[in-house]
Image (tube, rainbow, N blue to C red):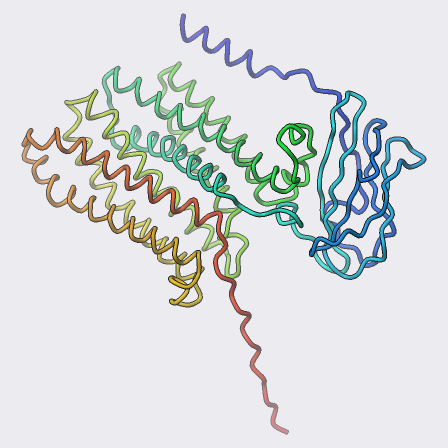
Length: 434
């Protein structure tokens, strides 16, 4: 009965709400991230309804922040706002606009265009400050959510194949917390990035036009795909609990692994110098293995140890074997990416990215030492069935998990930081003999 009620609530929440009648953008000139051969004489925004125009409804600025637009006005069509432009030189330009729609809400947005050059993504437009400390914390929360989800599902399917009812319930609680957090924290990360790009207070951001960010950047595309993907995972996880079907857990696990690649396809491994399918694959392997390792530790410490005492020995030994493979993948992929992103060894201590990487490497070394102690000291005692090791081992597993969380925090800062730029390789002169 309880499960039927919950299913009904989920279906009710899934019903679409009533759309607000504020103005939405129909078209712009220049278009989003359009590259023009000739400088335009004006910039325009056309809406689906008449809007009230302010003198500064549209502002156009150069890469350096110089204002090159005049006074905004309504066009002959009351749905269109237009602003004249001074003669534009070759370069990239940022357009920010705002208007008052018929329902009384101020709508706003941003786009970029280039004259003779490629336009930058809106997240790199003039005025955008880039990732902040708040975004580092949010990214960290996202990694922890993935660890709870991916690591929990992987542990349940590969390590603890049978659990007593109490432990099974807690597994679903932790995995459910992971998928809900992935959705909510992902939305928060997108909002923070959009707020920085649009340079709007949060109240006005609610009515902002986010299409250029959602569909015009790798970050936005990945956000949309991952959000839809994890909604599917949430449904699969709920159905697996409701119907008690193991195959649905496998579907949720594989879907989670697939959509976690969105971070690798939109980050440094996809856009920086030297990026290729190899760097994207290495980044995905690095992240996935780290989430499986940390999530497995949390499942051991919070599910198996307190609620499944009869499964402790077998689960610990199985996870110990899997952890060795995961750590090898983490180290191998991490070394490859570090060499790719740091052109010089001196960048480790001279560049901000390198210093954070050094901190991460130190934390990884500590985690590896902790894991080695479990493998070479605790594992033989567990194999012999020495019950005295079980109580201190629970606290030790939590300690290793805490170090893993610190590693993910360093990784979150690295993801939001830019590696040092690569110098272009000089072209060698070729001498042709007469």
